Length: 336
Image (tube, rainbow, N blue to C red; front, side, top):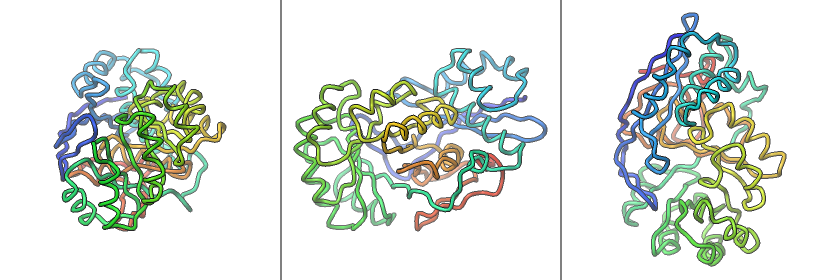
């Protein structure tokens, strides 16, 4: 199995700010796995919060590239277990796992959602993210991209006032993501005010390890709360069940589609709402997320929509938020 690694610097349409950081571009690793004249593509982006760079991922993968080339590829699940045994980071494993799934589907000539026995007759609508900025800039972004659901990044001293102002300019559903910036007291206080403003749920308002605070929020918040930074890997799902209404699974954080499928199953068994989110990936990563759509309650797969220029073709998200799935097998990805 041949392997290729390439770093891309993805420029963003606008400066993207959350409660802890801002950036104008996203560094991304694209992995290609080739077997029997078919190539599958996978992606993982760098992330300062988790101390992951493209260079660190490439170094990890290069260290085992000879073994990958000699690996007898049968299924993505067997390949994933091999990668875990090699001790790679979840981000590096994600890029390889996504490539393996894309390759597997292309070898079979079937999109992944069909391999998983699901149908795309109905699926949740992705939100479109509005990063922290001045109110004028946030309103301008909404007007530039009219959308049925917005995820609004917060974590300022005037969060409720911001939502009040944004509500004047849109009838869309709002979702709020504070990225760990609130306390339990703030969350409980803000929730009824935000509910009146048409907010559907709150995402990760508290610090990832504030389990006591989240227990308090679960008992007193009038809005559902979805775990993000508190739900990284498979073993986190059960703990989140006692402290959150739902989980947001990130492929890069958990290590790809293989563990994500198990997390979705576990979350549903526990009665949790299940969401999959993105990390501002290109269409390579977004197309992988899209294959999971029939299994999800919510989705945040707007990463490629936030880019000035994309690097791949695959799943297309139209201006009315509907999704066009490629006929190509796997995730349906081709690089431009």
